[in-house]
Length: 363
Image 1 (tube, rainbow, N blue to C red):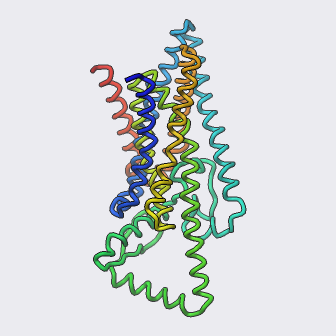
Image 2: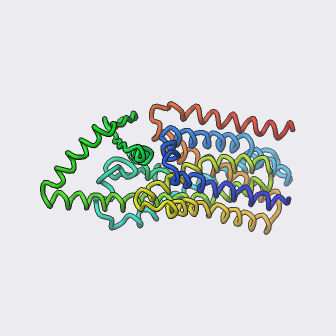
Image 3: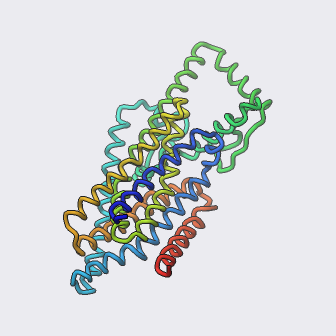
């Protein structure tokens, strides 16, 4: 099998892994598995893999490529470093593009879209630039807890049970049994039916909530689609020039594409009730990854030289580091503010990456 075909297959597998996460909507038990800790752990693990391989393997290969072209070691270090920070700058510009697109997409929305119901990104509708580009940013901690509650309701429905979240807004979650939950719901129902105005307000809030969920899912899909392009480019280049690097990068990207896929599909499912539509939106969010691979193929086919290899490796290392630092780790810590799994998952990702590289050399 040619290196080019191998690269495309690796990228295709990594991109379609969003479909794995999207498939969670077909089983409420799988949705229940998509807890904050699951999301935080998978994002932390992926960040560890990408950070380690970027500094230990990819950046080194950039310098080696310049040396192979006849450049002195000092200049090779300079050129690879410049390419590394160029990759970081490129991702920064891409973040700005996403920020602009999402700003236009949300322009003109009523205030309820950002301030009512569960928090949309952050409390009171405010989003930081650091969070705009993260795949799961549109799903707040309260949103994830609400998905858990709804999934538990689906699981319990066949037994005639109903659960609801009780307690404060902290990290812990607990659920009420049927009798207490039903009693609370009857009280709320009675209040809503006390006047026609109350009923109308409740219907309005429900409609706004469903529209917000759809907007959340589609905005997440847009962010993921745009950021999957450079990830596809990076994975393809790594696979063609060094299959060991490409394979490990594809695995790391696939791991964090799974929670991104479910962050697209779950809100769309709960807003529309259509599992297939939700799954397809999540799956389609990963199609730009193979497009990025095609761009990498076009670049390598037009100029197969050590200088091109050095530039691409350096930029790829910078892009992967920025994705890890700016997107994966902040989102992981938002889901796990007490750091019960993030740091350990990050270190585990580095250990797995290190063992993989050692085995490729030894075997």
